Image 1: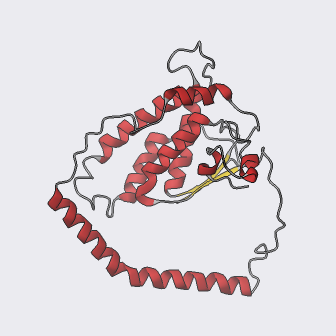
Image 2 (image 1 turned 60 degrees about the vertical axis):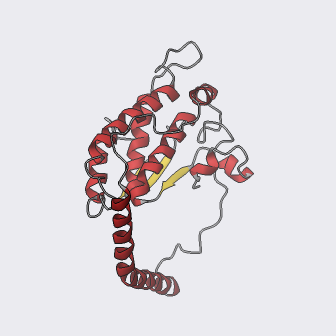
Image 3 (image 1 turned 90 degrees about the vertical axis):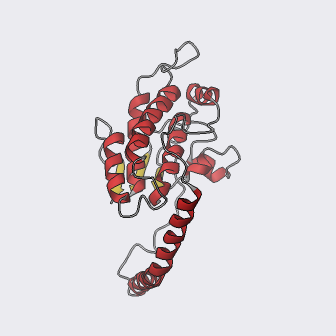
Length: 244
């Protein structure tokens, strides 16, 4: 049962989502709150930034306007081709469904998911991967995710690896108020995330000197990010599924 991340961390989420996510608190897959991690995450407070000092400089006004105009022009030029591809893809799927080539479409019975079988689906979001990674940091700070299954594509695949890296940082952490800084799972997760963000900032700053810096480079950037977020050990079989 897919579990939208935003709903998982919202106290007022619908009851079906609260059941799927193991309730309001931290163990969306075990069904029991991880009170220590939740408390530690709350003590760390809200974030107003990524917790690091970026070396990137704001774009000058003229360069920002130039990049925006160029980006919109390229989008307008590509729009007819994108529209045609979207319509053809939709028509192709409709024909497959009408010809009953996909036997599972529309025939699967609706089943109530269990707290022990939750899958987090992370889509590709191109340049919004940095917001996605912040979302994953929040989830790993406040939720026990070690039994969670994940499906991700493109930037979502990078976020899946990022989650494993944060789990690795949190493993073996002490819990309770007596633990020193860095000892609690939530604190370890935040520290690890900020270290990765610093590496990313140093890598990306030279590329982002103007608004179109990612043009033709985003795929290489995502490949490079994989080096930073890859965990030292592979997850158990069947837990993570990713696509390019």
